[in-house]
View 1 (cartoon, rainbow, N blue to C red):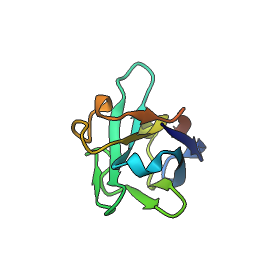
View 2: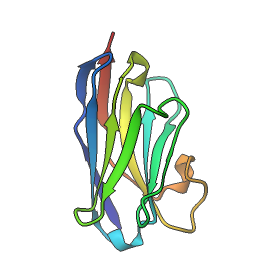
View 3: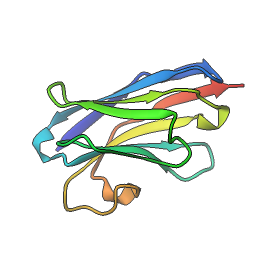
View 4: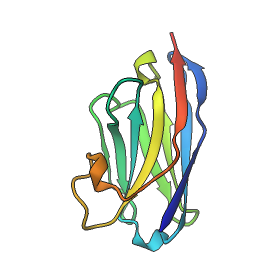
Length: 125
């Protein structure tokens, strides 16, 4: 089992920056990839970013590419999401997730085995 806890959400204005963090504990040796997803009211959960736990390669959703950066600290078992140039449409609950190597595509929620509780990010215009 892997436990994930997000932190760092809150209320900011459009154009501001915010950093989210996800702390992993438990069987972290089983983690192959970490992902960030978000869910706005009335919408499906959306892929935001992912990082390979070992080598650190990253991929991003089209709506955040160039503004968000995902990074990890393997020694601390944390994954961060740096969000710059925030827009009101970035408002959502943000979740971190972990998956093993044999699950499905990185951009689908069903591929991930473990989820955090989520943290609210609100961007005012």
